[in-house]
Every structure is written in C-alpha cells, then in structure tokens.
Image 1 (cartoon, rainbow, N blue to C red):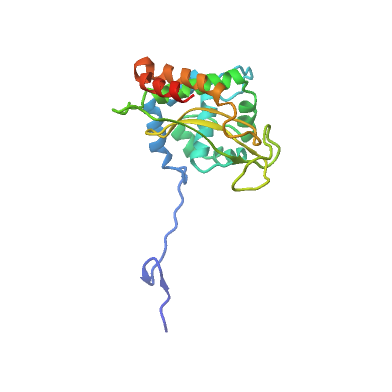
Image 2 (cartoon, rainbow, N blue to C red; image 1 turned 135 degrees about the horizontal axis):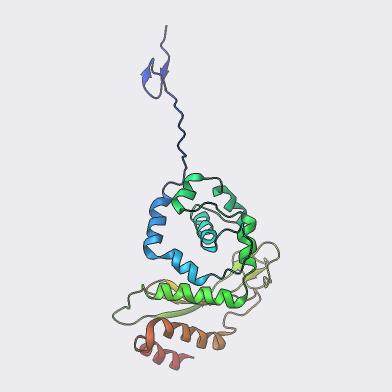
Amino acid sequence: MQEEGSAFGGGRASLEVRYTDKPVSGWGGLVAVVRYMDRLGVRELLRRGLADGRTSPNQIPVVDLAMGFMVAVLTGARRFAHVERLRADEVVRGILGVKRLPSAMTVSRYLGGLVRSQVEHLSQTLWQFTAERLKAPALGAVLDLDSTVFERYGHQEGSLKGYNPRKHGRPSHHPLLAMLAEAKVVVHAWLRSGNTASARGVNSFWPRLWRAYRRAFGSTRCAQTRAFSSANF
C-alpha cells in the first residue's frame, strides 16, 4: 500500500496548525518606512503645512489623517476607496502610533475642502523641505521646463479634449512642469486644461518659478541660472 506523503515533510508527515492572539499583517514592512519618515521629521512637516480648521470633537488629527493616506498610497492605493483596506489593520495603526485611521470619506472630504491658499502653502512647505536636502551640483543645476498629458475618466474640472498621444479623443489635463534635471525633482507646476497648447502660460509661469527657486537656493546659487533665463525667455 502506498504511503500518503506531504509536500511539507515527506511520508507520514503532519502539519501542525496553531492560532495566536497577536495581531498580524501583510504590511509589516512599513516599519522601516515609517521610522525613516519619523527620522526626517515628516509629521512635524505635515503639521506646519496642513491647515486644520475642523471643530468636531471626534475628528482624527490632521497629521494622523495625512499619514494614513500616505501609507495607503505606499501599499498600492490608487483611489480613495482603497484607504479602507488599512482601517481595521491593528498592526498598521501600531506602526503609525495612531488610535484610528481615516475612512475614504474623511480623506476625500478634507482634501476637497482645501482652498487655493492652503494648497499653495502646503506646496511651498514641502518644496522648502525638499530643497534643504538637495546637494548643489558642482557645475550648477539644469532647470527644465516641459509639459505632459494626463488622461482623465469621469468629470474632473478642466479636463478637456486636446492633444493626447495615448488616448486619442479622451479628456485630459496638460500640466506645465519645471524640473531640476540632476535631482529629478519637480520645482514648480501648473495644472492646465487638456486643450491648452504646450507653451501657453510660460511667460507668467516663469516669474513664480524663479521666486520659488530663489527662496530655496538663495541668490548665489541662482546666479548662473538667472543668466541663462534672461537669454532664453
């Protein structure tokens, strides 16, 4: 008679199953990421950059809300509904050191309530934080201006039909971007409608870009770039 075997241990092997009261999670690798973020001071950065005028006594602190949203993105979230995947994960809450994680509705309602001045303040705070950690190239930095196309699905404000190399006829946005070539970091960006020409708004875009660049790097590091910009714009 042929013996019944097991892939775990050969013939006559038994597989022992045990249960534990300890919480487990498939996202344990977030420990290293969150520790790195805490070392950089990301929570204090979010506290400075995010407005919080909410008055509900049951609200989730704005920093906890932002951290929960960021962790959801890091674990593969591609839409607000995916934030719900982590809400009941006790291990993730322990890694973040928070009592509760936000729902998809809480995140979308908070972000949807931000006004333009608050968005600009957050953008400036995050850019200053990034710029302080950039190393200046010995021969100077190259600042590139370019545009790209984001196709849209649904009814987003400003999404119109225009040039779209991937999805012909699909409504899109056509943002204008300024990037540091060496560091591959976006310095400044404007979101434009999909029917906008590539160079539209560049003359108005450049002065604001230049102010953001000067605030981050100072006049000495900007001297070479200024000479280039004067000759080309």
